[in-house]
Image (cartoon, rainbow, N blue to C red):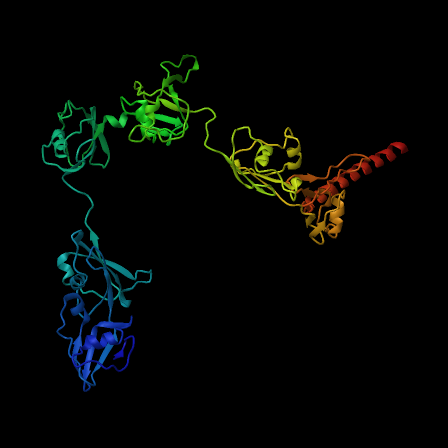
Length: 570
């Protein structure tokens, strides 16, 4: 295998191997290799020439000769190429042989498709060097008929383009809207509007009879609006117009003009929201559409907000209470027993149905003070840690700690940590020791579902962190203030703002310095066991602002002094 092939060289093939077998073994021609002239040489003579297009495009393997030992298969460089584009079956770039015409090129591309216009075949051609002008006219376009395509040769660099036929569909009208089979309808001379409506499947029962619109195309491509009306839904037309080609008929339905009517439900139902209104709909129907009542529903009555008969005086809605009963509860056993939690007593029912109006808003009330069991966690140094269910809505922190057996001998009540998950509150600083001593103390909070309290052991260490030279833990010293612990950690850095240092006590409470005026000393918090002292980063903008204020005051004072000197001299 020699010439423009991917892997030239010698190959061992079977006794039945052909030129195509050798070409396949060598990886085929390169991008520069020819598919139209593949020579088989034997004993220094060309014994056959293979045109791969004969096999690939027509399935003709006549020249795929069987090879013998010592044969040479030579792939020459490709010849001229032309590109076939547009409405042909196989648009691509094709290699050309001598004396091939545009018609031959179209046959190589599979021929013109059904949507191709054989009358509009063009050839974009690169002019020979001798015909090129100095003003950049190096290309030209030839327009060919079907007959000329069989005689005009195709050359290197040509682009043969087959244009599509027109998109316009003749002899038709379009029927849109409220008919059973909207779309194109074939038009015949003298066909009337009623005929087109019948061919479109006829009118739907809810057709609007008041007007049918016909849009007619004029010679200048503008449209004029025509109209008529219907006598009934059978398609009988008041003024049965004769239709023309390209007319567009529009039939309307009553539903298009009807506003969206709905009813709404909210409150103690599973899936509240809006639902389409249906004439004769009742409260019970709407409850079923909303997935049924929630187990907290108040079964004695519901409220309906309804649009008023008149809006005089600024009235926007009127409300009415309607009765409910236990028959609205769908979750029951075979013997009729309700499986949900107990609630307020209700009448057995079923009571009379309550019919709804469009746009009614139904509110299913909830039972007063209704809730499932609520639980809190008590952990740490209590005798019986665990998850406790609240017995009333007024149960407080001290009550639950007492139910947990009280504190152990190792408990550090001052470091008690309280957390509230509801509304993502998080940790709440409380004085648990005071709350346990005095149930009326403000920190003896009323508990909510998901609350938790942890009572730790005594931790006689105060942690110092932030902008200090040596962040560390310092042994607790009774009566020592925040400055003692900052100094014990090497003092504040140059970037540390010691005036804004604060303490987070073990119970979550945060205490900071209290700056007093005149000669009174600042109030300094005293960290307790388990507390954390934090020295924050200094705000450099504040120092800059202070410097600017000082500079401004100095400027004012200087101006005043200068003014005084001038007045004194005067």
